[in-house]
Length: 320
Ligand SMILES: Nc1ncnc2c1ncn2[C@@H]1O[C@H](COP(=O)(O)OP(=O)(O)OP(=O)(O)O)[C@@H](O)[C@H]1O
Ligand SMILES: [Mg+2]
Image (cartoon, rainbow, N blue to C red; front, top):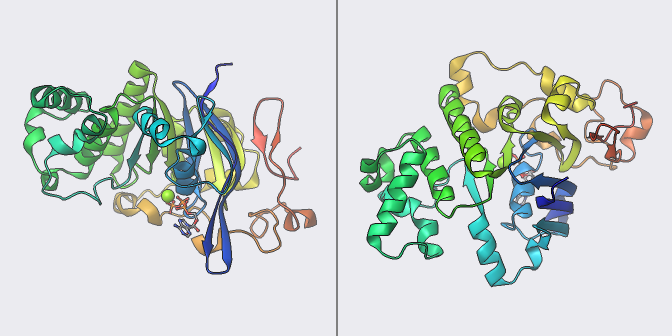
């Protein structure tokens, strides 16, 4: 089996507030190989964003390790991390919150080109950007337009162009299509799939929407309350989910109303309100209170994530 491009090993991220500790990511392990997509799915507050951010070094870790091509990201020197950011890019739900809306698309897309000094002069820089715009389905004239004139879908295309500008090998996509309506989502997913096929890109694809994750991911990891509770090949997991929580996720009916569909974004919760999805007092399985087949043991200690012979891993005392 090919070596992993990105690998998390027992990665933990705790947030400290006054005297409280909140374990947002607890002993998460996964591996993403070249050309592969790992989907990270779970309800709001389950720790997906934190997990993604800590695994690519956007957050400091609390414990464990995250390795890029075998090298510990959190122990890289400044120079090594700078070089790593050329190989690993991120696309967020609203990547332009930090940008001046009057800034031109040219300068936004060229950010990585400028940081990593990839263009010899202004002419080359512009040619590179135009090529990228065309690659993501935009046009040359978009280059000189300000951010304000772009629609949501076009902004995500810009975000993809910006990420591609440095010719990365890995892209962390955090809810990168969640705010878009369904047909635009499909276009962006298809674009990501085409780019993966032509460039052997790897994706860490984070979404609360299992339908989306299923469309793009080779493998899926289901998160709840900071832990992975089931992981394996997407089609196997979706065809026969083993953890009662994954079963409930899959059984949750999609919202048919197109207006609701359009606004679902962060509000779409599958099963429980976010305040209930944090760590469980007493340290049991996070699904204990809702689980139809819980045992007394499930309320005492979180079940370990055990590997099955088909390569799937499930954290449930009841699975047999
Ligand atoms: N900077 C922070 N300080 C304190 N707590 C945080 C911080 N960031 C996240 N958290 C907490 O960690 C938990 C996981 O948050 P995270 O944003 O990773 O969840 P998520 O699965 O990405 O949710 P969503 O689907 O809403 O994006 C939440 O309970 C959140 O309140
Ligand atoms: Mg998130």
